[in-house]
Image 1 (spheres, rainbow, N blue to C red):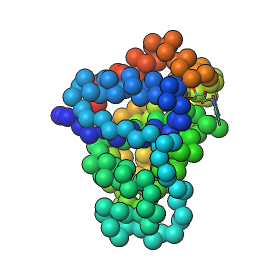
Image 2 (cartoon, rainbow, N blue to C red):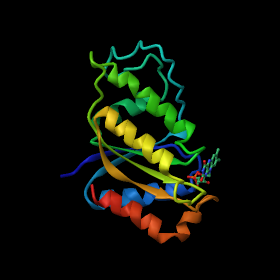
Image 3 (cartoon, rainbow, N blue to C red):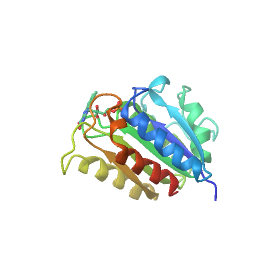
Length: 185
Ligand SMILES: Cc1cc2nc3c(=O)[nH]c(=O)nc-3n(C[C@H](O)[C@H](O)[C@H](O)COP(=O)(O)O)c2cc1C
């Protein structure tokens, strides 16, 4: 069955390693008949969550802040699968991506019990390090988030050993993993 996939791209480098992972993943997903919508967060105006708990009143515009998240909310509502794509910044997602994730709370506020819309989720990440424990913190964070939201994980691609923009293009096995994840959905 064709699925709607939303990719939130937290990398600011248009020709970077995350972008290459996203391209390979998208190719795989589209070849399997899925629809992919991507938002390049670093080119959007997305403020940090204000913690005002004043959202959740209007399903179309759930947050009190009327910035570029208003473009993402409808795609998030429609999506079957959400893919978080990011470079590793200080063992976590980039700030651009974390800002967007925090702002999804306004959607949970639409439900009197703060229930989140149920999704399947995965993540794609490029990092400089490639040690046995490099991706432990992000895997723990992602798995905790998915579990607590009541979501299901569809998997992840953790691509270590990539510092300069585009070096991942010399690692076909990492790109093949991203393509395979897209194809598998
Ligand atoms: C602010 C910043 C923080 C970073 N933190 C880490 C880190 O904690 N661990 C790591 O292995 N690489 C780290 N890196 C390296 C990036 O993850 C790596 O260069 C990645 O390939 C960038 O992906 P991109 O090309 O999609 O931007 C950091 C880079 C920057 C700019």
